[in-house]
Amino acid sequence: MLEQEANVGGSTRRLPVIAVTMATSRQGIGVVKELSKTNKYQIRAITRNIKSTKALELGSLANVELVKGDLMDPESLSRAFDGVDAIFGNTTPTKGWKVFRGSIVRSYEMKQGFNLINQVKVAYKKRRLNHFIFSSISKAKDPLKNDPAPGHFTSKWDIEEYIERCDLKEITTVLRPVSYFENFENKLPGYTISKRIFPGIVNENFKWQTIAVEDIGKWVRGVLSKPEKYKNQSINIAGEELTGLEMAMTLQRLVPSEGLQTNYVMIPRVAMKIIEYDIGVMADWIERTGYGADMNKLKLIQTDLNIVPTSLKDWLKRKLVEQNKTKSSWTRQWKSYQWKLQWDK
Figure 1 (cartoon, rainbow, N blue to C red):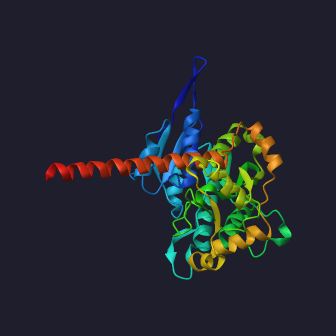
Figure 2: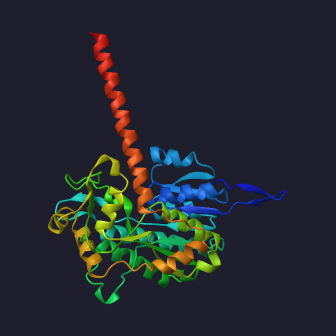
Figure 3: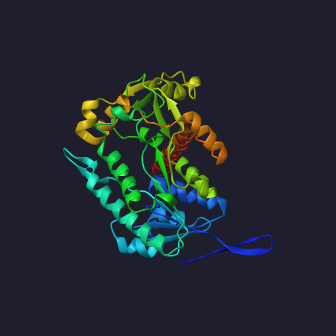
């Protein structure tokens, strides 16, 4: 596997090698892109298919090497982690959709987690790995109201406990993100985000902590810059804390000239539990206890790590631009098609 050197002050030094698991996932892409921009690391982007479109896009970035690896295949992880200085590890509970189960399978994520941590331990024993960053999920604001928690939350927390049992806590930073802005982009008819609708899963007046998935990359870049300060720490991370109505109002303020009313629409809890049961349990959990990110404390840490969190307003602005580009592209294609029809007559 490749190792690169950087020229600093007339002398060369080896770039630290950072392995990123599930590199073509939403989190993985954000982490790889953020680290690539720094030009301070050699990044091993680990993915099951190194020839996929997403993988090839990552492979074209500076200091990024595509490496084949699968969290369900310990041997592939062992090869991918050989000689690395740090590892970013994340897992997924998603395993195809089935009636009465949805797509979330707790046992599937636990298996990934055990494989990941076991191979982190192997790499650590080789005495080069010195920092492990694990992406978990935010703990509860009120621990006394934690139960019942959704299965894809408890799987992450159980993996955290396994990290401690494997004596890896002293080299580990656990980042615990809250709900993603990207989750608002669901495909449910009548509940898809638009200029008129802002969909949500909790009561319109409930304060709900959220974050842009790309910001996980900023947090990884930040804690890598000060590893000794942030090892052996667990941090609930969030970017915003708004009610559903405040979120809808944020979107409406971006489209005032169009005379549109943006309404917050809550997806019915019963429907959620039929389509994706664990997400329905998650919605109950959020309303009962709330995510536990300390927004004031986070501001201090963000300043220390030079992290500028993405606001919901800025995220929505980008989505509107993307929608307009897509709409313009379809309009141009349609006009071209109409012109061709006239020409062919």
